[in-house]
Length: 85
Image 1 (cartoon, one colour):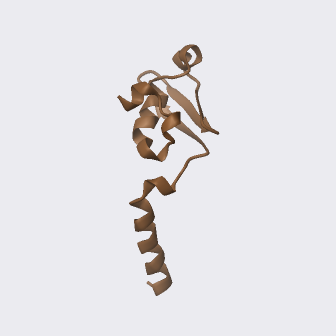
Image 2: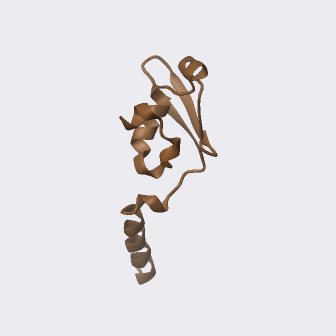
Image 3: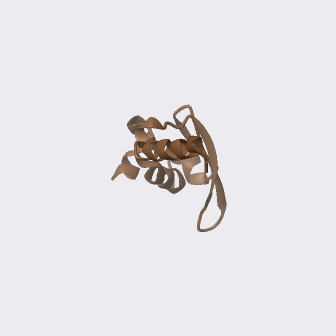
């Protein structure tokens, strides 16, 4: 392995140890629920999920699970109270 690649690997480790360097703007994921697969997206600070509960409440177990998984990588203002409890 060349020295350039070794330097990049070391830099990636430093970045990974500082998750506040990373911020999400847009993404889509599939969450396997108990009964169905659900499409969850995050765009410009707003969550969306195709499940019926999200349509009624604006939050659901799928979005809260992603908030827990992503933790500090999401801006604090974008995390629901239930997911941070």
